[in-house]
Each structure stands twice: as structure tokens, then as C-alpha cells.
Length: 398
Image (cartoon, rainbow, N blue to C red; front, side):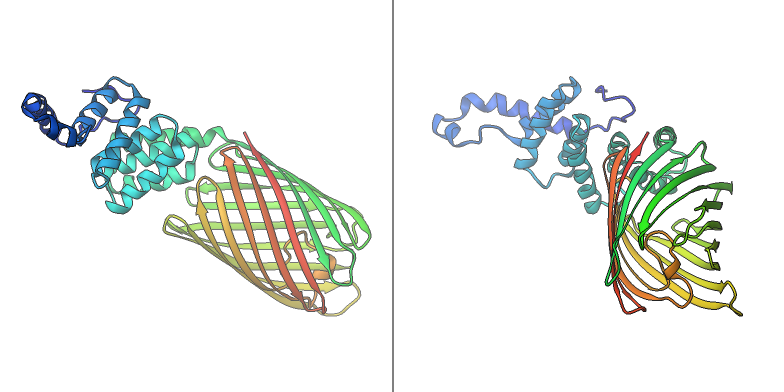
């Protein structure tokens, strides 16, 4: 059996005996071919290229084998087996992006092909794309629950995911309001995942708005008591603030009710200089297929101003459509109505304030550990003004 890279199961090529016999017959018949006929014959046949590629692959001469299979696929582009080995060799020689595309095309032609799924999972593991690899391996686990190759790769995936335990990011955000001074702010955050059940984050914000410069700091903790249940709490302080809430506390519960459906509910309390705000509402996330995300959220706010009888109610809702690709990459568009804030909570966004907003955001990781995110939202506000909100975030994982 030919030697293959570690962790890769060898798949015998189809028709190898027939290929060898064909090549032998061509060699025996060569002296009988007239010179004129030989000049018209192809310089290299597909059978000879296939034999050469198989030999080079067995000898671990991978760059030369890749060249042979490239030429072979050009001669016979419809041969599934040759294209499979071309995809394998692209991955083995470090051309992971091209290999990923090649395996995806093979699976579009033959959905559920075991060897192509294994090859795609390997490529994504080598690239550090844990989310993409998990999607493929979860599908394989359903059809091959006890397959040692699948279980081995799931173990490798768990080890890879556990290596990235820290994430730091720096975000700049800004707002441009009609007839108001511009807002500028920056947030520095640190996130950690000590285990599969526990994660925490901390953040500090510096903001200039309405000619007030204020700071805010705090963090949150999330714990998963059950495999599909997560409880989260957070607390932030902004001592002496007039625009930001001086104290913010929140709790949330998330439950995975189906493999691709998450339901949750959140409650928050915001203590402003002259008002107390209670917010609560449900949310859902639906992952459709391999790439699509649909998220929706509703929130009811009750605001009680100091020295004023009664409370003011307000409603807010948002709907998001996202496209997931690669490891942690997301392109999304969203629409919102009500008192939804797209940056930090702010004094003018409480009470009977409402807005209609449209926006988009793009998060991309050029490498598994370094990424960026940009966002933009346009709001038509109930106070008669328009607001442009935008942000830029840099992310570093290790």
C-alpha cells in the first residue's frame, strides 16, 4: 500500500490494473506504429499520466505528482477520481484554499461522498477553520457514528479549538448626528475561555459625546451547566457619567433546542443619572444550511425618570440575515425599529425615543488568529434627526 501523509487514509485508485495493462500494450505496439501515425498521436496519454501520477504519489514526490494530476485533469476533466487526487495533492502541498474549493465542487457533484468529506475536513483542520471542519465532521458523525477516521478528526478538532483560549480586540466607533456634535469612542476588550463550559470577558470604554468625555468599565461571565444551556451575567460601571449609564447589570439564558436553533432571553438594568431603565426580551438564532444565519430579537424597556410619576414603555426589535464562511467570518445585514442602540447605551436613547435603522457589518479573519470587523448603520430618529453609526474592530487570538 502506498505511503500517505500521517492521519490520511489511503484510497486505492480506480482502474489501476487496467491502466498498467494499457500502458504495457502501448509500449509493445510502439515499434509497429508508422512514423507518420506516431507524429499525429498525442505526446502523452491519460493512462500514462495516471500511471506516472500514481507512482509519484507512492514515492511521496508530491509537487511532481501534483503537476501530473493537473495535466491529467486537463485531459479528462470529467474523471471524478482524478479530480479527487488533485484536491488531495493540493492540500498536501499547502494549497489549502484551492483544495477546499476543489473538495466543495466534488461534494456538489456527489453529495455525501465519504472520502471527499474526509478530505475537506482535513483541509479545514490544517487551515485552523474549526467551525467549517466541525460542520463537515458533524455530518459525517451522523452517517458514520463509530467510524475511527471521523472520531480521530473530531478529537483533533477539540484539541485545536482548545488552543485558542484568549482574544483581545480594540474597537473604534463613531456617530454623526444631524445638528449635534460628533461622537467618538473606543473600547478595549479581553475574552478568555478557560474550559469548554466557562468563558469571561472584560472591557473598558472611553467616549466623547455631547461635549462630555466619560469612561466605562466592567465585564461578564458565562457558564454552561448543561451541554446545550448557557447562563450569562454582566456588570459595567461609569462613575459620575451623565450620558452613559452609571451602572449596568444584565443576565441572560441561552438554550440550544435543535442542532441549528438557539433560543434565549435577556434582562438588563441601566442606572442613569436621572432615570432607571429595565429591559427584557427574547431572542433567537437559526443556522440554515452551512452558511446562513437568521437572528431576531425583541426588547421591551420601562423607564422611570427621577421625580416623575409613572414609567415610560418602549419597544424595540431587530432582524439580521448573515452569511457565514470560513472560520469565524460573517457578512450580515440588519434592520431595526424602536429604541435599539448600535453603540454604547446613551441618555438620549431612553424614554419614548425610537428609530428606524438599516445596516451592515463584515467580520473577516485573514488568518485563524488575526481578524477585523467593520460596521455601518443608518438611523432615522424620532427626534427629527438622522444618525450615521460606524465602527472598526481589530481582533487578536492566541
